[in-house]
Length: 419
Image (cartoon, rainbow, N blue to C red):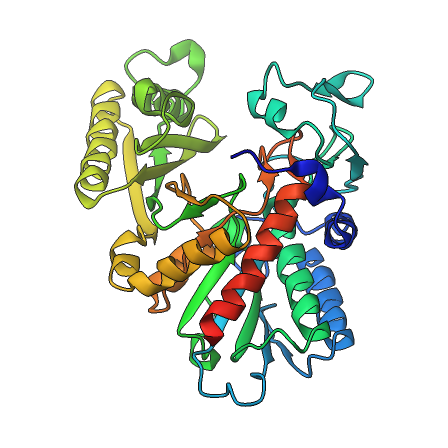
């Protein structure tokens, strides 16, 4: 059954959610994968410090922001429920650098009429291109002016956790067990859990709010590796290069051209993995290419690793005198196996969504979350929808109605774990 977006967007929580997302989105928090330090950018501190202040204003006294921008807040259980399991809710404060994230100018589109939304004089958010927009007639949308991303990934998740927490703290009739609120830096760089203070966390289960369309519940994700290729050539004057030149730029271009086009991000969906070259740089003597390797199972990933190794050898054969150096590193693993070992964590999530009036359904994450890493580290952490759409793009937008649904789901989860 289609949600009643008009009614959802008219609820009091909708205004608070929209105001929070607007406030958080205006703070520049783009992370930088080229910086090893965590957090990789100073703007992430600005949002995290604001969240510390907001948590304390809600009456949360146990709030820690450590030297690497990991924020952990603890809410004690309602009287008599101290023995209930501690449950965590997590989102990340950084935004992707795939599209501009500075000077974000969010605005609301109330009572959406199903027509193209004008973002700027030259750009629209058009349901002819983004067909799912047609489902949101009557909803309130949050968009930008088309010059930046919105940052709903994952500031919508941050807003939903904060709003849900505010609700339960204001209403003593909502009884709950011990809670942990976790906000992390640098999720978009893949390093978001590298220095995570795991030993301080008490949660037996956690939930990331980092998904998209309303009702999506994600309990499996890609297994992810990064292949970094370095091409070492031999330079000589191009006018006298025959038999002597090994052009590293040409080597890099040949390497990328041999990656299977039918297994690229733009050619795959569902449970199909891919090769994705995401950065190339260099000159005649040296060039570099970074390639994301993604698959849902170990055998598929093994095949991809062997493929990039074979392609590197083929490039060396094409360019006598040139060499290719490969560095292949794991980023995160598919969380499905460990979540399958803890079925109650997902069962409670599905039940909470139903109690919130949401029709939940399973969907694989064509990516990963900090929850993927946290699951690998021993705390089962499935992913929950946030109502954000078109992540990492200038056409990113959020459904305020679905943000209300996500907030309701968090509140129902908190109640369920206290039963």
